[in-house]
Image 1 (cartoon, rainbow, N blue to C red):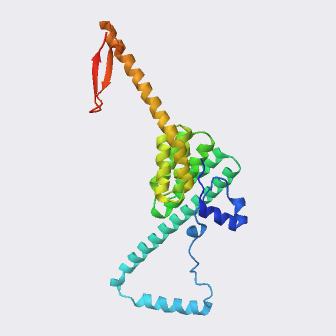
Image 2 (image 1 turned 30 degrees about the horizontal axis):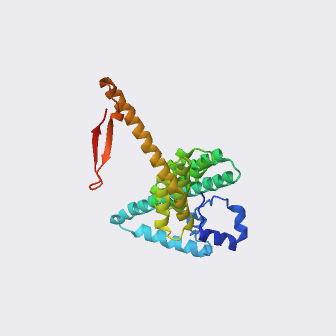
Image 3 (image 1 turned 180 degrees about the horizontal axis):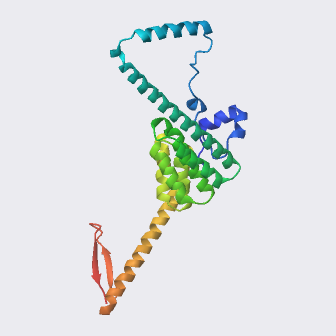
Length: 268
């Protein structure tokens, strides 16, 4: 069960050079530009003599400043701490992105176990903050498709569910979880995922087609489960009634055509 994502397909067809970097499961990568560092503010291009003049002027001002201006030093320290924290977060995001990219390469090579480890490293590196939601959801979904390839469908469902907790409108995670549910014959759950896709993208004909294919299977499974339940109840009833020389066959359910209700009659 593979859903067709029209916009992504158009983009790939329009730029064939992207095909070598994409696989059949539509792997995603976080935008490299989102993870890029800020520009260099080191003051390059300022003449050396100007720097010296400004430094000398600053030193004179510092000597003349009264003691009550000391709190500025504390404020500066706080700003430096904030900058340092932001740099640390940015570094962690870069490390997470590198691990994710390596995981994608391993997946394309069919090395699913190794890819799983790289995605896990990315998740450990990515800080738990709003700016990392995208990469974390992608890594969980990509771990889900690795487990799908390995036939570990329960794990696929768990990983895709985590991805959807971070991004409830993540269609690829719904696709992968729905496929895992179908493999486990959880037809009702698979249908629910396809319906969620239609809520997000009403034009997704593949999701609609999948629902039509799964509904008869879901109905068949419900009927089978009902028959199994009735058989179990019948066996339980016979074990109790057998003590009195009776069985459930002595009891007949008669439907009232007017009310639709049932009445039980005893027969020898």
